[in-house]
Length: 383
Image 1 (cartoon, helix red, strand yellow):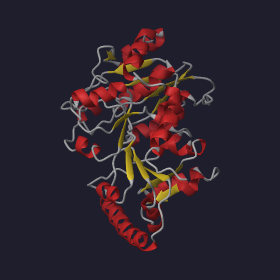
Image 2 (cartoon, rainbow, N blue to C red):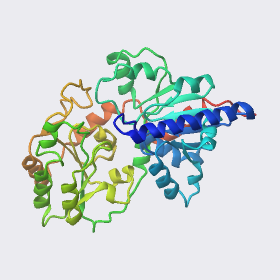
Image 3 (cartoon, rainbow, N blue to C red):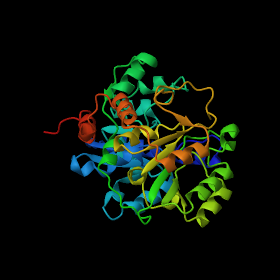
Image 4 (cartoon, one colour):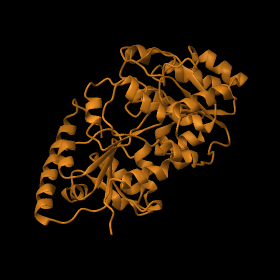
């Protein structure tokens, strides 16, 4: 759960969680039980790198639990993993006995940040920042780099990101680990059957709107109803369908949702029984704007088209992941449709150059094994 200062329910959740944490800590002190060689995974949701580590733990004999403070997500995951027994490793931060598992663990691996990080360090719990996306912008929050210094390991996407931190961000701490992102490894070994009568799947996965009204009014965003109507008209009588995957922090307007539910050509990702990795594997074409999702999609060597709506973050300074001369952006849906009709795909040279740039020093087939090796480095050897 990402804390929202404007939602009262989040204050209640944090309050109850803190009370439970105090209870768990007191019992931890009294019980004097030894720590276990296990890792706690924590993030807004069990997706991406965290999900990949969680579902592959048995292959590498490393016990991992996932902790959430979001009740609906907790119940969803308990049901989702019921059949393979992993539901027993889903923890809820309101339950003291679940927080006790955290206090007895050796490692905490997170995708965004940790509550009580300094306190957990005093309890000799090691921490890993596994990340969630290759950095497309320079740090917006001045405390971002300062917080990263608390971690024992900060996983880098590749040598490219390592140099970005050292040379551009001026990051000083010697805790950067060129590990690669486990979710990319998982993507390459995922194969999903097409459930749309073998129609070609277009995936539209834009960046977050940040509630920027200029961006939302653009004809190149799903907030603008004309975008959906034009796509519906374009897809008519074509062997194509469109899947809309909004950014995790964005909500689709109700008018658009109603339209999509009646459509036979456009689908919402949230209404489909796929996770994000399966969705990327299924997609035949990726359409995006300023999202870094395309970097994960590059190894699939499938067409990618970049739109050019107004920048939702005009005051941000972008890295070479977003501001890149190799990327050609389209400023109208007409231009996009023309390229789709003519099958004017980006050249293989473009894919190769971008992949070589962002995946420098990384063997994708070795990422998952390397990830668990790096986790286990922080655990004592049990004789």
